[in-house]
Length: 477
Image: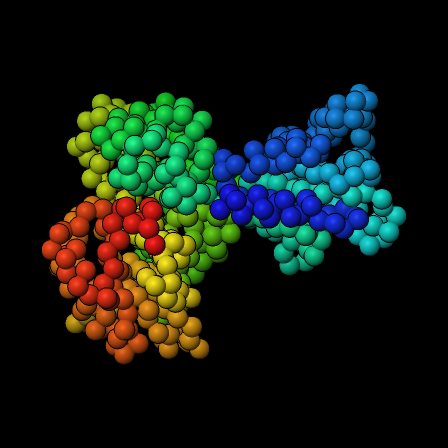
Protein backbone atom coordinates (compact mmCIF):
# COMPACT_ATOMS: atom_id res chain seq x y z
CA UNK A 1 0.00 0.00 0.00
CA UNK A 2 2.81 2.43 0.78
CA UNK A 3 4.16 2.22 -2.78
CA UNK A 4 0.69 3.11 -4.07
CA UNK A 5 0.45 6.00 -1.61
CA UNK A 6 3.83 7.40 -2.68
CA UNK A 7 2.91 7.01 -6.34
CA UNK A 8 -0.42 8.80 -5.92
CA UNK A 9 1.17 11.65 -3.99
CA UNK A 10 4.02 11.92 -6.51
CA UNK A 11 1.61 12.08 -9.45
CA UNK A 12 -0.29 14.90 -7.75
CA UNK A 13 2.85 16.88 -6.99
CA UNK A 14 4.20 16.35 -10.52
CA UNK A 15 1.02 17.51 -12.24
CA UNK A 16 1.90 19.76 -15.21
CA UNK A 17 -1.01 22.12 -14.53
CA UNK A 18 0.20 25.71 -14.22
CA UNK A 19 -2.05 26.63 -11.29
CA UNK A 20 -2.39 25.90 -7.56
CA UNK A 21 -3.85 22.49 -6.68
CA UNK A 22 -5.45 21.16 -3.51
CA UNK A 23 -4.91 17.69 -2.12
CA UNK A 24 -6.11 15.85 0.98
CA UNK A 25 -4.16 13.16 2.80
CA UNK A 26 -5.69 11.47 5.83
CA UNK A 27 -5.88 8.26 7.83
CA UNK A 28 -5.25 6.74 11.25
CA UNK A 29 -2.65 8.26 13.51
CA UNK A 30 0.86 6.80 13.44
CA UNK A 31 0.59 5.11 10.05
CA UNK A 32 3.28 7.26 8.41
CA UNK A 33 1.36 10.16 6.82
CA UNK A 34 3.53 12.89 8.28
CA UNK A 35 6.77 11.03 7.59
CA UNK A 36 5.84 10.69 3.92
CA UNK A 37 4.83 14.35 3.62
CA UNK A 38 7.92 15.67 5.41
CA UNK A 39 10.16 13.67 3.08
CA UNK A 40 8.36 15.04 0.04
CA UNK A 41 8.56 18.60 1.34
CA UNK A 42 12.27 18.30 2.07
CA UNK A 43 13.19 16.63 -1.22
CA UNK A 44 11.19 19.13 -3.31
CA UNK A 45 12.06 22.33 -1.44
CA UNK A 46 8.53 22.64 -0.10
CA UNK A 47 7.02 23.91 3.14
CA UNK A 48 5.67 21.77 5.98
CA UNK A 49 3.72 23.06 8.98
CA UNK A 50 2.18 21.00 11.78
CA UNK A 51 -0.69 22.67 13.60
CA UNK A 52 -1.34 22.22 17.31
CA UNK A 53 -4.47 22.27 19.43
CA UNK A 54 -4.69 26.04 19.98
CA UNK A 55 -6.74 29.12 19.16
CA UNK A 56 -6.27 30.84 15.80
CA UNK A 57 -4.02 33.70 17.02
CA UNK A 58 -1.54 31.13 18.36
CA UNK A 59 -1.75 29.07 15.16
CA UNK A 60 -1.17 32.14 13.00
CA UNK A 61 1.78 33.27 15.10
CA UNK A 62 3.41 29.85 14.82
CA UNK A 63 2.70 29.69 11.09
CA UNK A 64 4.14 33.18 10.58
CA UNK A 65 7.31 32.15 12.40
CA UNK A 66 7.67 28.97 10.37
CA UNK A 67 7.03 30.77 7.06
CA UNK A 68 9.55 33.48 7.92
CA UNK A 69 12.21 30.90 8.75
CA UNK A 70 11.47 29.06 5.51
CA UNK A 71 11.86 32.27 3.50
CA UNK A 72 14.78 33.56 5.55
CA UNK A 73 13.10 36.91 6.29
CA UNK A 74 12.15 36.67 9.95
CA UNK A 75 8.69 36.13 11.39
CA UNK A 76 5.75 37.15 9.21
CA UNK A 77 2.84 38.89 10.91
CA UNK A 78 -0.32 37.14 9.71
CA UNK A 79 -3.47 38.96 10.80
CA UNK A 80 -5.98 36.30 9.73
CA UNK A 81 -6.32 33.07 7.76
CA UNK A 82 -7.10 34.87 4.54
CA UNK A 83 -3.69 36.51 4.69
CA UNK A 84 -2.10 33.22 5.74
CA UNK A 85 -3.55 31.28 2.81
CA UNK A 86 -2.36 33.99 0.44
CA UNK A 87 1.16 33.75 1.86
CA UNK A 88 1.14 29.96 1.54
CA UNK A 89 0.04 30.02 -2.11
CA UNK A 90 2.65 32.68 -2.84
CA UNK A 91 5.33 30.06 -2.09
CA UNK A 92 4.53 28.49 -5.45
CA UNK A 93 4.93 31.60 -7.62
CA UNK A 94 8.34 30.59 -8.96
CA UNK A 95 7.99 26.83 -9.19
CA UNK A 96 5.86 23.83 -8.30
CA UNK A 97 6.29 23.16 -4.58
CA UNK A 98 4.39 21.15 -1.95
CA UNK A 99 2.83 23.30 0.77
CA UNK A 100 1.63 21.09 3.61
CA UNK A 101 -0.66 21.88 6.53
CA UNK A 102 -0.55 18.88 8.85
CA UNK A 103 -3.06 18.25 11.66
CA UNK A 104 -5.50 20.40 9.71
CA UNK A 105 -8.28 19.34 12.08
CA UNK A 106 -6.83 21.60 14.77
CA UNK A 107 -7.02 24.57 12.38
CA UNK A 108 -10.65 23.87 11.48
CA UNK A 109 -11.60 23.31 15.12
CA UNK A 110 -10.27 26.76 16.02
CA UNK A 111 -11.73 28.54 12.96
CA UNK A 112 -14.27 26.72 10.73
CA UNK A 113 -14.22 29.61 8.26
CA UNK A 114 -10.84 28.40 6.94
CA UNK A 115 -12.75 26.01 4.65
CA UNK A 116 -14.50 28.90 2.93
CA UNK A 117 -11.30 30.96 2.81
CA UNK A 118 -9.57 28.13 0.96
CA UNK A 119 -12.56 27.78 -1.37
CA UNK A 120 -12.34 31.44 -2.36
CA UNK A 121 -8.55 31.29 -2.75
CA UNK A 122 -8.86 28.29 -5.08
CA UNK A 123 -11.97 29.48 -6.90
CA UNK A 124 -12.17 30.49 -10.57
CA UNK A 125 -11.85 34.21 -9.88
CA UNK A 126 -8.77 33.89 -7.71
CA UNK A 127 -7.14 31.38 -10.07
CA UNK A 128 -7.35 33.84 -12.99
CA UNK A 129 -5.30 36.32 -10.99
CA UNK A 130 -2.92 33.80 -9.42
CA UNK A 131 0.55 32.91 -10.65
CA UNK A 132 0.99 30.25 -8.01
CA UNK A 133 1.82 26.65 -8.79
CA UNK A 134 1.67 25.53 -5.18
CA UNK A 135 0.45 22.03 -4.36
CA UNK A 136 -1.45 22.70 -1.15
CA UNK A 137 -1.94 19.54 0.91
CA UNK A 138 -4.21 19.32 3.94
CA UNK A 139 -3.40 16.38 6.21
CA UNK A 140 -5.29 15.03 9.21
CA UNK A 141 -6.05 12.02 11.37
CA UNK A 142 -9.72 12.71 12.15
CA UNK A 143 -11.04 10.66 9.23
CA UNK A 144 -14.68 11.74 9.40
CA UNK A 145 -13.75 15.42 9.60
CA UNK A 146 -11.29 15.21 6.71
CA UNK A 147 -13.74 13.26 4.54
CA UNK A 148 -16.45 15.85 5.25
CA UNK A 149 -14.29 18.60 3.70
CA UNK A 150 -15.31 17.44 0.21
CA UNK A 151 -18.69 15.81 0.82
CA UNK A 152 -22.21 17.05 0.24
CA UNK A 153 -22.42 20.84 0.25
CA UNK A 154 -19.01 21.39 1.86
CA UNK A 155 -17.26 24.54 0.58
CA UNK A 156 -14.29 22.56 -0.77
CA UNK A 157 -16.35 20.02 -2.68
CA UNK A 158 -14.96 19.67 -6.19
CA UNK A 159 -11.78 21.59 -5.38
CA UNK A 160 -9.45 18.69 -4.44
CA UNK A 161 -7.35 16.97 -7.09
CA UNK A 162 -6.15 14.32 -4.63
CA UNK A 163 -7.94 12.55 -1.78
CA UNK A 164 -5.49 9.98 -0.46
CA UNK A 165 -6.88 7.85 2.37
CA UNK A 166 -3.93 6.02 3.89
CA UNK A 167 -4.53 2.63 5.52
CA UNK A 168 -2.47 0.59 7.97
CA UNK A 169 -0.11 -1.89 6.32
CA UNK A 170 -1.35 -5.40 5.53
CA UNK A 171 -0.12 -8.41 7.47
CA UNK A 172 2.61 -9.21 4.93
CA UNK A 173 4.19 -5.77 5.18
CA UNK A 174 3.80 -5.78 8.96
CA UNK A 175 5.76 -9.05 9.14
CA UNK A 176 8.80 -7.40 7.56
CA UNK A 177 9.28 -5.28 10.69
CA UNK A 178 10.01 -8.30 12.88
CA UNK A 179 13.60 -9.43 13.42
CA UNK A 180 14.94 -11.72 10.70
CA UNK A 181 14.06 -15.30 11.49
CA UNK A 182 11.13 -14.47 13.79
CA UNK A 183 8.86 -16.70 11.71
CA UNK A 184 5.30 -16.45 10.45
CA UNK A 185 3.78 -17.83 13.65
CA UNK A 186 5.24 -14.94 15.63
CA UNK A 187 4.28 -12.51 12.86
CA UNK A 188 0.64 -13.63 12.93
CA UNK A 189 0.46 -13.21 16.70
CA UNK A 190 2.08 -9.78 16.67
CA UNK A 191 -0.27 -8.65 13.90
CA UNK A 192 -3.21 -9.80 16.03
CA UNK A 193 -2.02 -7.44 18.76
CA UNK A 194 -0.86 -4.29 16.96
CA UNK A 195 -2.00 -4.70 13.37
CA UNK A 196 -0.27 -2.79 10.60
CA UNK A 197 0.20 0.64 12.19
CA UNK A 198 3.89 1.40 11.85
CA UNK A 199 4.01 3.56 14.98
CA UNK A 200 2.79 0.66 17.11
CA UNK A 201 5.69 -1.49 15.90
CA UNK A 202 8.35 1.16 16.41
CA UNK A 203 8.27 4.06 18.88
CA UNK A 204 5.30 2.84 20.91
CA UNK A 205 6.99 -0.47 21.79
CA UNK A 206 10.44 1.13 22.07
CA UNK A 207 11.45 -0.62 18.82
CA UNK A 208 11.14 -3.97 20.59
CA UNK A 209 9.41 -6.80 18.71
CA UNK A 210 9.54 -10.56 19.44
CA UNK A 211 12.62 -12.40 18.22
CA UNK A 212 10.54 -15.53 17.58
CA UNK A 213 7.38 -17.34 18.69
CA UNK A 214 8.94 -18.22 22.07
CA UNK A 215 9.61 -14.53 22.75
CA UNK A 216 6.03 -13.45 22.04
CA UNK A 217 4.72 -13.92 25.59
CA UNK A 218 7.53 -11.81 27.04
CA UNK A 219 6.87 -9.09 24.47
CA UNK A 220 3.10 -8.85 24.86
CA UNK A 221 3.40 -8.67 28.65
CA UNK A 222 6.19 -6.08 28.73
CA UNK A 223 5.26 -3.89 25.78
CA UNK A 224 1.46 -4.05 25.62
CA UNK A 225 -0.12 -5.33 28.86
CA UNK A 226 2.19 -3.52 31.26
CA UNK A 227 0.30 -0.54 32.77
CA UNK A 228 3.34 1.61 31.92
CA UNK A 229 3.20 0.66 28.22
CA UNK A 230 2.22 3.53 25.93
CA UNK A 231 -0.21 1.29 24.03
CA UNK A 232 -2.34 0.85 27.16
CA UNK A 233 -4.18 4.13 26.57
CA UNK A 234 -3.88 4.39 22.81
CA UNK A 235 -7.44 3.34 21.87
CA UNK A 236 -8.97 5.77 24.37
CA UNK A 237 -6.74 8.53 23.03
CA UNK A 238 -7.74 7.79 19.43
CA UNK A 239 -11.41 8.34 20.22
CA UNK A 240 -10.78 11.39 22.39
CA UNK A 241 -8.79 13.10 19.62
CA UNK A 242 -11.52 12.69 16.99
CA UNK A 243 -13.90 15.70 17.15
CA UNK A 244 -16.68 13.73 15.46
CA UNK A 245 -16.78 11.35 18.44
CA UNK A 246 -16.56 13.83 21.30
CA UNK A 247 -19.57 14.74 23.38
CA UNK A 248 -22.29 12.96 25.29
CA UNK A 249 -22.06 9.65 23.39
CA UNK A 250 -18.45 9.00 24.40
CA UNK A 251 -19.34 6.11 26.74
CA UNK A 252 -21.69 4.62 24.14
CA UNK A 253 -18.90 4.68 21.54
CA UNK A 254 -16.65 2.67 23.83
CA UNK A 255 -19.49 0.31 24.74
CA UNK A 256 -20.26 -0.45 21.09
CA UNK A 257 -16.60 -1.07 20.26
CA UNK A 258 -16.36 -3.37 23.27
CA UNK A 259 -19.50 -5.25 22.27
CA UNK A 260 -18.18 -5.92 18.75
CA UNK A 261 -14.75 -6.98 20.03
CA UNK A 262 -16.39 -9.52 22.31
CA UNK A 263 -18.59 -11.20 19.73
CA UNK A 264 -21.67 -9.04 19.19
CA UNK A 265 -21.32 -8.45 15.46
CA UNK A 266 -24.87 -7.82 14.19
CA UNK A 267 -26.87 -4.66 14.79
CA UNK A 268 -29.32 -6.60 16.94
CA UNK A 269 -26.74 -8.25 19.19
CA UNK A 270 -24.81 -4.99 19.55
CA UNK A 271 -27.99 -3.17 20.56
CA UNK A 272 -28.82 -5.88 23.11
CA UNK A 273 -25.31 -5.71 24.55
CA UNK A 274 -25.44 -1.95 25.10
CA UNK A 275 -29.11 -2.03 26.22
CA UNK A 276 -30.40 0.16 23.39
CA UNK A 277 -32.84 -0.20 20.52
CA UNK A 278 -31.32 -0.89 17.09
CA UNK A 279 -32.81 2.38 15.82
CA UNK A 280 -31.04 4.24 18.64
CA UNK A 281 -27.57 2.98 17.73
CA UNK A 282 -27.81 3.21 13.94
CA UNK A 283 -26.51 6.78 13.79
CA UNK A 284 -23.74 5.99 16.28
CA UNK A 285 -22.65 2.95 14.25
CA UNK A 286 -22.50 5.05 11.11
CA UNK A 287 -20.48 7.70 12.90
CA UNK A 288 -17.96 5.10 14.08
CA UNK A 289 -17.74 3.71 10.55
CA UNK A 290 -17.14 7.18 9.10
CA UNK A 291 -14.48 7.82 11.74
CA UNK A 292 -12.64 4.66 10.72
CA UNK A 293 -13.16 2.56 13.86
CA UNK A 294 -15.71 0.05 12.55
CA UNK A 295 -16.07 -1.70 9.21
CA UNK A 296 -19.38 -3.01 7.90
CA UNK A 297 -19.04 -6.35 6.08
CA UNK A 298 -21.84 -6.90 3.60
CA UNK A 299 -22.93 -10.50 3.06
CA UNK A 300 -21.92 -11.39 -0.53
CA UNK A 301 -25.09 -13.40 -1.16
CA UNK A 302 -27.74 -11.82 1.08
CA UNK A 303 -29.27 -8.38 1.41
CA UNK A 304 -29.31 -6.57 4.73
CA UNK A 305 -27.30 -9.16 6.65
CA UNK A 306 -24.21 -7.09 7.48
CA UNK A 307 -21.67 -8.02 10.12
CA UNK A 308 -19.71 -5.38 11.98
CA UNK A 309 -16.04 -5.62 12.92
CA UNK A 310 -13.38 -3.33 14.33
CA UNK A 311 -11.17 -1.93 11.62
CA UNK A 312 -7.88 -3.23 12.94
CA UNK A 313 -6.57 -5.84 15.30
CA UNK A 314 -5.14 -3.40 17.85
CA UNK A 315 -8.64 -2.12 18.58
CA UNK A 316 -9.82 -5.73 18.81
CA UNK A 317 -7.04 -6.51 21.30
CA UNK A 318 -7.72 -3.41 23.37
CA UNK A 319 -11.45 -3.94 23.74
CA UNK A 320 -11.28 -7.72 24.19
CA UNK A 321 -8.19 -7.97 26.41
CA UNK A 322 -6.89 -4.70 27.84
CA UNK A 323 -10.10 -2.89 28.77
CA UNK A 324 -12.10 -5.78 30.33
CA UNK A 325 -9.15 -6.96 32.40
CA UNK A 326 -7.61 -3.63 33.32
CA UNK A 327 -7.96 -4.16 37.07
CA UNK A 328 -6.23 -7.53 36.95
CA UNK A 329 -3.39 -6.03 34.92
CA UNK A 330 -2.85 -3.39 37.59
CA UNK A 331 -3.20 -5.59 40.64
CA UNK A 332 -1.69 -8.97 39.78
CA UNK A 333 1.59 -10.31 38.42
CA UNK A 334 1.34 -9.77 34.68
CA UNK A 335 2.89 -12.99 33.44
CA UNK A 336 0.58 -14.99 35.66
CA UNK A 337 -2.51 -13.10 34.43
CA UNK A 338 -1.42 -13.64 30.84
CA UNK A 339 -0.67 -17.35 31.10
CA UNK A 340 -3.62 -18.28 33.32
CA UNK A 341 -6.34 -16.16 31.79
CA UNK A 342 -5.62 -13.66 29.06
CA UNK A 343 -3.80 -15.93 26.62
CA UNK A 344 -6.98 -17.97 26.20
CA UNK A 345 -9.04 -14.79 25.74
CA UNK A 346 -6.53 -13.59 23.15
CA UNK A 347 -6.77 -16.85 21.23
CA UNK A 348 -10.57 -16.92 21.09
CA UNK A 349 -11.59 -13.26 20.89
CA UNK A 350 -8.67 -11.72 19.03
CA UNK A 351 -6.60 -14.21 17.06
CA UNK A 352 -9.71 -15.92 15.68
CA UNK A 353 -11.44 -12.83 14.22
CA UNK A 354 -8.13 -11.32 13.06
CA UNK A 355 -7.11 -14.53 11.29
CA UNK A 356 -10.47 -14.67 9.53
CA UNK A 357 -9.91 -11.14 8.21
CA UNK A 358 -6.36 -12.07 7.15
CA UNK A 359 -7.86 -14.95 5.15
CA UNK A 360 -10.32 -12.62 3.40
CA UNK A 361 -7.51 -10.12 2.67
CA UNK A 362 -5.43 -12.95 1.19
CA UNK A 363 -8.27 -13.85 -1.18
CA UNK A 364 -8.71 -10.23 -2.28
CA UNK A 365 -5.06 -9.15 -2.50
CA UNK A 366 -2.84 -12.19 -2.93
CA UNK A 367 -4.69 -15.23 -4.29
CA UNK A 368 -3.93 -15.98 -7.92
CA UNK A 369 -6.61 -16.18 -10.59
CA UNK A 370 -6.01 -19.92 -10.69
CA UNK A 371 -6.75 -20.24 -6.98
CA UNK A 372 -9.77 -17.90 -6.99
CA UNK A 373 -10.69 -16.94 -10.57
CA UNK A 374 -13.43 -14.42 -9.68
CA UNK A 375 -13.66 -12.29 -6.51
CA UNK A 376 -16.17 -9.52 -7.08
CA UNK A 377 -17.68 -9.94 -3.61
CA UNK A 378 -15.72 -11.27 -0.63
CA UNK A 379 -16.92 -11.37 2.94
CA UNK A 380 -18.29 -13.46 5.77
CA UNK A 381 -21.66 -15.15 5.34
CA UNK A 382 -24.01 -17.75 6.80
CA UNK A 383 -25.39 -21.06 5.66
CA UNK A 384 -28.37 -22.89 7.09
CA UNK A 385 -27.76 -26.59 7.73
CA UNK A 386 -30.63 -28.58 9.25
CA UNK A 387 -32.31 -25.34 10.26
CA UNK A 388 -29.29 -23.96 12.10
CA UNK A 389 -27.24 -21.00 10.84
CA UNK A 390 -23.51 -21.65 10.57
CA UNK A 391 -21.03 -18.84 9.99
CA UNK A 392 -18.78 -18.98 6.94
CA UNK A 393 -15.51 -17.12 7.51
CA UNK A 394 -14.92 -16.55 3.79
CA UNK A 395 -17.40 -16.52 0.93
CA UNK A 396 -16.45 -15.39 -2.58
CA UNK A 397 -19.14 -14.55 -5.10
CA UNK A 398 -19.27 -13.23 -8.65
CA UNK A 399 -21.42 -10.55 -10.23
CA UNK A 400 -25.20 -10.90 -10.13
CA UNK A 401 -28.26 -8.69 -10.49
CA UNK A 402 -29.12 -9.45 -6.87
CA UNK A 403 -27.02 -10.99 -4.07
CA UNK A 404 -29.05 -14.19 -4.13
CA UNK A 405 -28.36 -14.69 -7.84
CA UNK A 406 -24.57 -14.54 -7.58
CA UNK A 407 -22.45 -17.55 -8.36
CA UNK A 408 -20.54 -18.70 -5.28
CA UNK A 409 -16.95 -19.10 -6.42
CA UNK A 410 -15.40 -20.25 -3.14
CA UNK A 411 -16.12 -20.69 0.53
CA UNK A 412 -13.63 -21.06 3.29
CA UNK A 413 -12.91 -21.66 6.93
CA UNK A 414 -10.08 -19.99 8.88
CA UNK A 415 -8.73 -21.55 12.09
CA UNK A 416 -5.85 -19.92 13.93
CA UNK A 417 -5.75 -21.94 17.12
CA UNK A 418 -6.57 -25.50 16.09
CA UNK A 419 -5.20 -28.00 13.62
CA UNK A 420 -7.03 -28.28 10.32
CA UNK A 421 -8.28 -31.84 9.74
CA UNK A 422 -10.62 -33.67 7.41
CA UNK A 423 -13.40 -32.71 9.83
CA UNK A 424 -13.11 -29.09 8.67
CA UNK A 425 -13.22 -30.18 5.03
CA UNK A 426 -16.37 -32.22 5.64
CA UNK A 427 -17.98 -29.17 7.24
CA UNK A 428 -17.25 -27.06 4.15
CA UNK A 429 -18.59 -29.80 1.88
CA UNK A 430 -21.85 -29.81 3.83
CA UNK A 431 -22.01 -26.03 3.57
CA UNK A 432 -21.46 -26.14 -0.19
CA UNK A 433 -24.27 -28.64 -0.59
CA UNK A 434 -26.61 -26.57 1.59
CA UNK A 435 -25.94 -23.44 -0.51
CA UNK A 436 -27.46 -25.16 -3.55
CA UNK A 437 -26.86 -24.89 -7.27
CA UNK A 438 -25.13 -21.49 -7.09
CA UNK A 439 -22.30 -23.13 -5.12
CA UNK A 440 -22.06 -26.42 -6.95
CA UNK A 441 -18.62 -25.63 -8.42
CA UNK A 442 -17.29 -23.59 -5.48
CA UNK A 443 -13.75 -24.18 -4.31
CA UNK A 444 -13.18 -25.05 -0.67
CA UNK A 445 -10.51 -22.94 1.06
CA UNK A 446 -8.99 -24.05 4.37
CA UNK A 447 -6.82 -21.50 6.21
CA UNK A 448 -4.82 -22.60 9.24
CA UNK A 449 -1.58 -22.36 11.16
CA UNK A 450 -1.32 -26.14 11.51
CA UNK A 451 -2.59 -28.75 9.05
CA UNK A 452 -3.00 -32.50 9.55
CA UNK A 453 -0.96 -34.51 7.06
CA UNK A 454 -3.98 -36.60 6.07
CA UNK A 455 -5.80 -33.43 4.99
CA UNK A 456 -2.75 -32.27 3.03
CA UNK A 457 -2.68 -35.57 1.12
CA UNK A 458 -6.42 -35.48 0.46
CA UNK A 459 -6.26 -31.89 -0.84
CA UNK A 460 -3.42 -32.82 -3.19
CA UNK A 461 -5.71 -35.34 -4.86
CA UNK A 462 -8.53 -32.85 -5.48
CA UNK A 463 -8.73 -29.73 -7.62
CA UNK A 464 -11.57 -28.18 -5.59
CA UNK A 465 -9.69 -27.96 -2.27
CA UNK A 466 -7.01 -25.41 -1.38
CA UNK A 467 -4.94 -25.52 1.81
CA UNK A 468 -3.56 -22.14 2.86
CA UNK A 469 -1.09 -22.56 5.72
CA UNK A 470 0.99 -19.75 7.22
CA UNK A 471 3.73 -20.08 4.62
CA UNK A 472 1.26 -19.74 1.76
CA UNK A 473 -0.66 -17.01 3.54
CA UNK A 474 2.48 -14.88 3.87
CA UNK A 475 4.34 -15.75 0.69
CA UNK A 476 2.16 -17.66 -1.75
CA UNK A 477 -0.85 -17.16 -3.99
